[in-house]
Length: 138
Length: 220
Image (cartoon, rainbow over all chains, first blue to last red; front, top):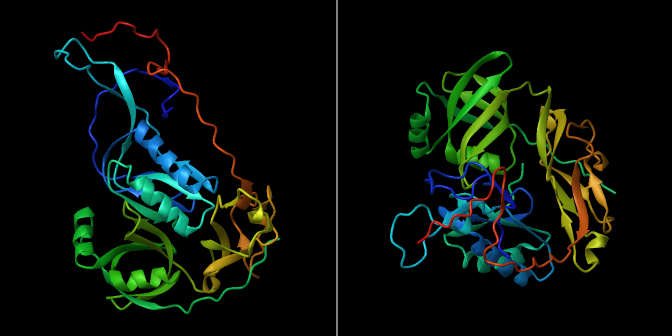
C-alpha cells in the first residue's frame, strides 16, 4: 500500500506551482548516503513505493533505509470520457512535491559500493534525474 | 570504549582577500561567475567587513580542513579569522558564501569537529546488525591554534544494542565538550524487517479533520 496521510484538513487541493530549489531536506541527515533529485515535479506515492521496494530487495535485510519525502498532496483526475465542468474531480492518488536538491532516500549501515548499486536501481524508477550523494561532514 | 588520538593542528595559512564595496545578491552572483567567493568577517566588536576570496584557493583550503586563516585584505590589514559557517548551494556541492569571525590565535573558540569512527565493532558481525551515527560531529571548545581535523572514536568494543554518547568520547587534552553529553554518536542496532502494509481497497481515503466527509460525487 503506497504512502498517504492518515488525516487531512481538506480532501482536495489546487495544483499549485513549483518554483526554485529545495531549501530544506537537501542534505543527508539520517543515513550516510542518499539519493538526491536534480529535477522538479510531483513524485507519486507509487513511485516512492517502487523505489523503496527496489532498494529493499537489492539490500535484502542490510542497513536501514529512510524515505525523506512524503506524498501529502492529493491529485484529482477526471474519469475517462467525462465532459469538462461539473466541479473538481475526486482525488486519484497522492504525490510529494520535489524540487532540485531534495533528498528522496537515505541509507545507513551499508558499504558505499552497495549503496551506489542500490540507488542506481532506484534512480531508474524515478520520474526525474537523480544523483548519489554522501553525508557532508563538519 | 571510546578513545581519541590527538590530531595535528594546522599552521595558519595566509589568504589574500579583496574588500567588497558593492553588496547584494546580484553582485555576489557576478563575483561567483568571476571565480570569486563572497565572504564576511565580523566579531571582536568591530564593524563587519565584506570581502571576497579567490574561489579555487579558498575551496582547496577548506577541503583540507583548515579552520583558521590569516586573511590579508587589499587595504593592507591582516587578521586571524575562524571559519564560522559555510553556505552551500541547493545541491550541496558548491560553497556559495563564507562567514568568518575575527579571533585571537590564543583565545578559546567553539567549533564543530568531525568524528571519525575507527575499529571493527564486535556487534557488526551479528547478522542484520548495522551502525547508526545520529551525530557525526561534536561541538568542542579549544584553543584556536589547536583545532583538530577530526576526533577519532574507537568503536571496536561495541556490541549490539550499545551506544556511545558524546560524553563518552575522550577529547584530546585542553578541549572541552560543548555539545549535549547525552547526544548519541554511534549505536548498533539490528535491522528489523519492515512489515508489509496490508492491502486496502482503492477507495480508501484519509479522514478529514473537522467536518463531515463530502459524499456528493461530482463526476458525471
